[in-house]
Image (tube, rainbow, N blue to C red; front, side, top):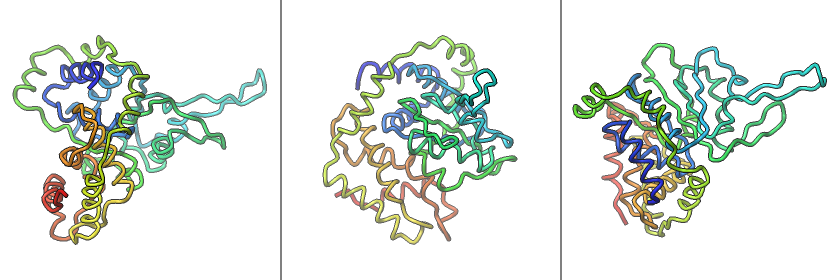
Length: 305
């Protein structure tokens, strides 16, 4: 692991107390050039994690508050007629930043949610017939309230599939919560954070992820996982090829964080919950099981080659 990346993790853990796994998964997602969905109750640190990563990584940051009256133009931008030169001038929206916090994304209508689709998949947006490239690196962290809360719209499957991972923050343990209660306000600490990495170094690390070796046996293991989800009766539908690519990319990034140049099965198992828990849906008698149980049974059902 580079010294800069190690410093990023240490600084983030000083703010997000008791959540090393969530910080590591978020960085894994970023190194794999994916996007992250954080689903949990309000007040558990979803927004704080996004702010900390943006400040620590030195990325240009924009927050978009998703509401029921949000329009796609509020995200992408709009052309305004300039009377002086008699031309339309494009005013870019907040999507033109290196890190986007799509806060409470499921409080917006599907029309507004769809404005993120091309940006997340192609790292570009098409506005009024003109395609405009987005900055690099480009990373979306979306927060989502539980679907049973008032005023939420479910994310369609096509939107969910654009997120490489979905994680939950969860409640802090007693020691971490005492640190929050007795410590300085998190917002004051974030305001004093200094970047621990240049964007050029982050781009270089993303390229290194692609070079992490995945042996034929490791690919056999990933294919066996995909095949099991497609054949098992407990799932509404199996994992797609895109899910398989996401699993491989995330496993490579996890291996890089462990300072290894090859992926091992334990890397795949470490990232599997985040990659598949928003893509797998249990049916019948299995629908009462939570996602953690489903993923654990999936790991147990597929033998390591």
